[in-house]
Amino acid sequence: MTTDLAPPDLTRSIADRIALIEGGIVVPPAKGLGNQSVQRSGVLRPDGTLVPESVTWRGRTQVTVAPALPAGEIADLPGTWMFLGPLFGHFGHFLVESICRIWAYARLEGRIDGVLYVPKFQNRPEHVANVYRPFLRALGVGAEMRNLEEPARVERLYVPQQGFGMFQMIEGAPEFRDFVRARAGKGIAPQGAERIYVSRSALPPARGSILFERRLEALLEAEGYTILHPQKLDHAGQIAAYRAARDVIAVDCSPLHLLALVGNSDQRVGVIARRDGRLDEIFARQIRAFQGAEATAIDTLRHNWIEDHASRPSRTSWGEIDFPALGRALNAAGLIAGGLDWSRPDEDEVTAEIARISQASGIAFKRWAGPPGTAPADAD
Image 1 (cartoon, rainbow, N blue to C red):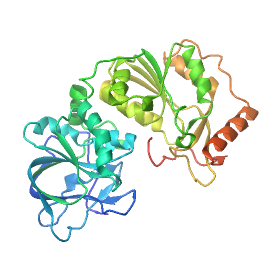
Image 2: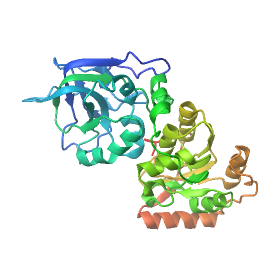
Image 3: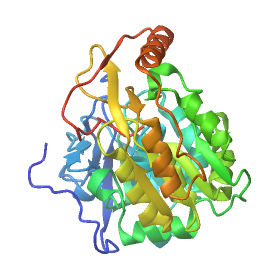
Image 4: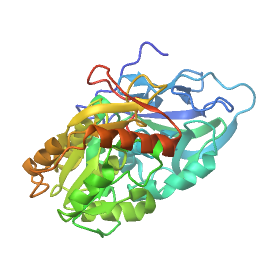
């Protein structure tokens, strides 16, 4: 890993952090390596040195490190293009790490032939590109998008610095926030319920959530909420629903990234922690920073339930929440009128719920006794 690089400082303007490289070489990760947490890919100058603006960071850790100069013939790509970094197939990481350079499109629109990704890893790269092209257009990038499987020497290549990311970068740089507020979702009309609960109950059990989520859904339906399963909607339907909602409740999960991008300042949002790691606070920070909405992080976790083979909570673990405390917190945030008499499931109910999840997923779970505040590996 390159040792003389540092995570970008997004607390100030990054307007001048766009490198222009003549004959820049875009290097995707090597084929056959699988989905590695850190990939050797990015942009090299003609002499083989790394363009530092092409590095993608996750918090204070590099997701991409300098690749080697490709051997043999390198295909030429004529024209002027903008580099966007790795294209993740995972929805949440796409909404954070694959769009982290779109802020520069506002400055380069009309001067470039399109935008370039490299695959996060070499698994059906054109399929992944087809999935996310509509999302990219809905977020305000209308140019042609390519996902390069092979190295390419680009005639003229703009390489913007990352302007958004996980953890300390979640509020984004001023230019990124400006781009989102001006463009994201603006071509899609609001349509949907005024009060929504963004649910995980229709996802496969292996994806994780909170125990007794359907009980929470029933309690919220009694408060006038509509249960939203975003994976059942196309990109336009999801954006329309988030633009229409006035009150939103969700456990910490990827759809909240999209809400932060396309929501509005009149919304009230409750983010319920479903695992240790303070991701509820990170999502709330993003929503407040991007849209100025009233976002409340609500951590009422009693226990984390993790797979038998796991050592810490993650995106696949299950949170056991304190229902009475959650009801009071949602009431205090103005998100529900009641909630002061919610009851807590007893131990027999918890045992039965864990048995149901274990049987459905084919995985045994155990109650985690680790230290509080341990960050999960990612933020799905």
